[in-house]
Length: 520
Image (cartoon, rainbow, N blue to C red; front, side, top):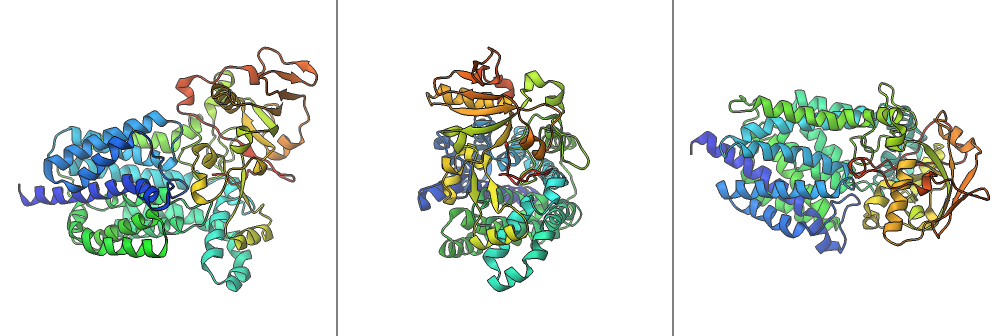
């Protein structure tokens, strides 16, 4: 093997080791804490009995055996991802698109895998970061009273700044937070595209901020996913040059991280951080020649990622797990984005998509527990937010549906139900079918909303006939039996659509006007 081939092998080894750490991270946290660790940790399932050993072997072996194990592990993980749809985290979609590119690159032969895979994955990552920033360009995110940017920065500010300084500067920080968050996220793909060394360094600092955020926004899963792939935004020669740095410095850093913060997610991120930083400062940072790269693979990977990152929300084919994390984006019921509409197919085909809106005023059991408020930590952050006319609470339907919020120490309790909420007929039908299929009792009261109402204030103000769903499965409108086609009596949405689309609700609070609250 020539020197170029050996360098490619070292680069592939570094990627394989980082990827294996990402795959194994939830397992490490379960061993360490007894739970899956970060609030957005990849859920462990039966398929991990196969995946985890394959990932470990891919990291430990070398040469053709390592490549074969890596390819097989990627295929297994993609199959597990597809099986769980739509119950996946947004960062799992980010992982899946790059993993699919690796499979396609490796399937073309064992030589020049790196030269085919690296540019394709780099294009995908730039588009993903751009998409995450783009969807925050909406009125609800830019309003500090409802923005997720305000919530997260207030948490970090309250947790790590001296309390007196945090209080004194809080009014300025909370008002500027949405714009600072948006500006930072816009800068990341631009910097990584034009100045890779700077961009990757900034991205690592951004993800460090995310992984240090207190509950309920300890998104360590997202940070670990991205940190395992940021090296792909550097020339592959830099990864090859950094291959000798993993064993000593990075492992020491991870051990120190565990000593200070008892979390495998944080320790794994620390290890990835140090490995990637070593690649940033390694030799070979000149632009890759591109010899042996596949323009076709890069174009196909970029187009498919663009569809996920930008097109699916416009069409209304994805809400949960879309590239709009923490964006306050209205996916249905009228767009709040400054440039693009959302939910076009839902508006065009309301029967197929079940896009009629309902205001659920009362619910019990799982219907209540899956739509809850949670308190924001630390307590000082809540105080700072309320002083800025923010609710000081966070709606967590995504965490509730994924079933891992307890990993952050926040219990899903019915008494914390965020009622009333606005949801689509699609989601009500899906939820009721799930409850009935598992033998659980469903009890709720809802009001159907006219299609021309598109703001929280209008949804709250509407007075209509109340539909009462009883525990025995029957329903009444006022005192009369429901019609046979009443939404609560309709069958679940078609499987082909519900495997992609899960539109979680909007929470409502007294005094709401135009903007929607931060949800996660």
